[in-house]
Image 1: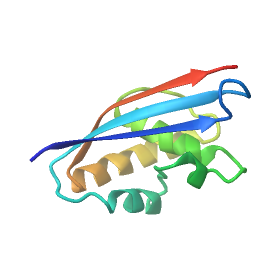
Image 2: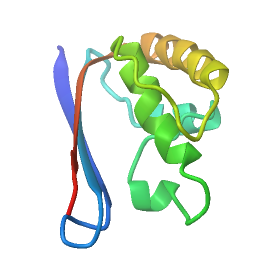
Image 3: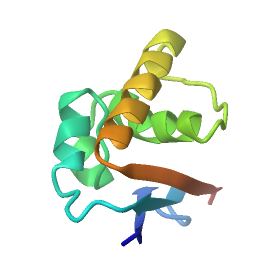
Image 4: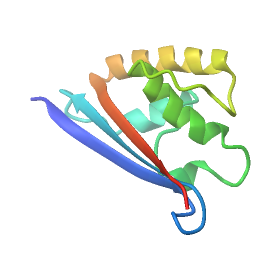
Length: 116
């Protein structure tokens, strides 16, 4: 049976204090259990999850990776700021292979920036 999984997160200081980015992803899977997917992706260098657990005050590269790699899979060509292009291309290929092995397909991702 196919199921749809939605994921959402926000990152930033809120519209009154600074920029805020809100995102939503939609995933389709026929697998019974995909609980290991996040851990597998993290081990491959693709962190997906709560931005507060990924970002610890240093470079935004990990946050950017978790956004750009799924976007590239959806053929949305957003340029990296904190990562190099070759890394994003390589991780995008890895991401697609991992999703295929886990019977998961990302079919949409939306994001919006809000400025104060």
